Length: 138
Ligand code: GDP
Image (cartoon, rainbow, N blue to C red):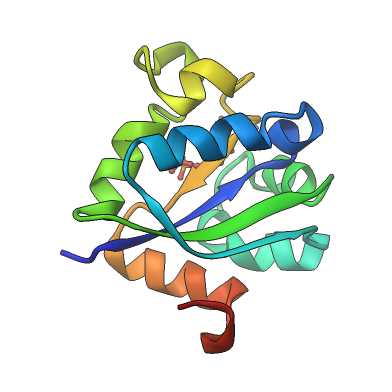
């Protein structure tokens, strides 16, 4: 079990001014920020990040959405980080997300769902390395 996970605040949420509210929910839930940047992915970068979903029918839509505007990428730390963060963000489809979750409060649809959270310790490391050098984290 690792104590770190990786997150992005997605373009729908940055565009709607939800960045501050989402960060506040993460901090209140006990996560601390070990690295963070505001950036925008090219379609090539978004395609590479989500390469694992290449065969899924929504891949093209996902890549276009994720490169449509700025995102916030961050590495978060907490005991049991990956699992606890998945609980905090809620179900992929906000219609199924529990009360008190980030997606329940801020997500619009199954595609435009406000936040990303790594689904395993292994992917948390791969995704963190995609965005951050050793110098950019502590
Ligand atoms: P997550 O781990 O909860 O983010 O969900 P998945 O790994 O299954 O999917 C990755 C991302 O692809 C989701 O967060 C959504 O942004 C997007 N996505 C998943 N399912 C759909 C879908 O049916 N339609 C669209 N447009 N996007 C989807």
